[in-house]
Length: 134
Image (cartoon, rainbow, N blue to C red):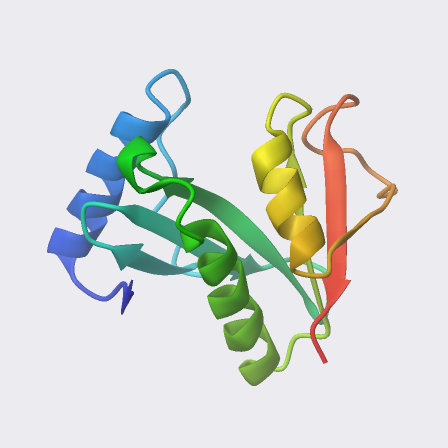
């Protein structure tokens, strides 16, 4: 997996995002606080700090259908957890939608647990996840 540094990687992520999530708004790869990784032609993922000290947020991750079932999403979760630990974060959070049990199962397999945040920023019917990284 390549850590995002170049404009051509930004374009590649945007192309993957459009292919994997054609009905969603494009992912914000220009957020300067975010760190992105890409497996060219196959997958991408990101992470960024939150407003709460010590907490990072797993941004969107996507795997092209032809590459699903090969452990890429779990690998991307572990990559971001390692980065968060190295960068000094204490916890990582994210969310999934109820119609995406595959992502929920991958988060559970990587040690995440459900939690109820004080503000449900992604909607009332969303599953929120958190995990300590230290």
